[in-house]
Length: 224
Image (cartoon, rainbow, N blue to C red; front, side, top):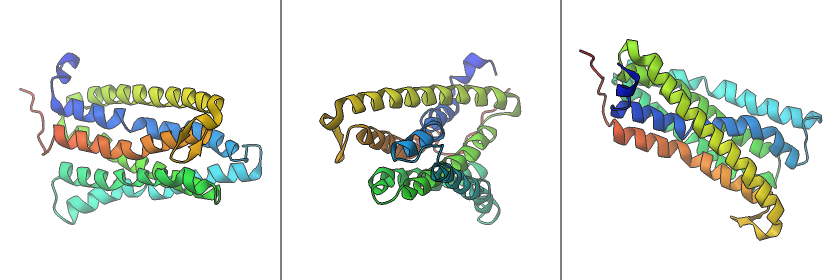
C-alpha cells in the first residue's frame, strides 16, 4: 500500500491516535521523574534519589510483563478474537495511568508514594504499548505493518515532544508565578506537575475511546 493511501484508512488513524496521546506519558515519566524527585528534596546524587528511580523502574519491569500475558489469556482461554482480546486488555491497562492522579497529593505524606504510583502508571504504559504494536498485525497485511508502525511512531514522537516541551515551559511559568499559579490546591511548580500528571492519567482512556470509535470491530484491510 503506498504511504499516502495508508492515511485513507480508519485503522491508520486509530493507530496514530493510540500512539500520539499515550507515548508522551511514558517519555514524561522517563525524563522528568529524576527532576521531580529532586524537587521533593532527593537529587540523583543521593542514595534515596537513586533508590526512588530504581523502585520506579522495578515496578515497571515486573508489572508490565502482564501486557503480553493478558490478551493471550483472553484469546486462548476465553476464545476471543485477537483484536477484541487486545482491545480489552488495553482498556484494562488504560486504567493503570489513572494512579498518576494521586502522585502529587500523596507526595506530601512520603516521596515513596509517587515513586510507586509513577511505576504503576509506567507499567500500564508498557503493557499498553506491547498490545498497541500488535494491533497493526490484526488490521493490516504483513507488507504494510512496518509502514503503519513507522507512521504511528512518528505520531508518538510528536506527542512526546509536545508534552515534554509543554511541561518544561509550564514548570518555568508556574515557578515564576509562585503562589499566583494554583491548580487543585497546589501552588507554583507543584501545581504544574499536578496538571501534567492529570493529562498523563486520562490520556490512555481518551486514546482507547478514539481507537474504539474508529475501529469498533475487527476489520482487516485486504489488498487486492
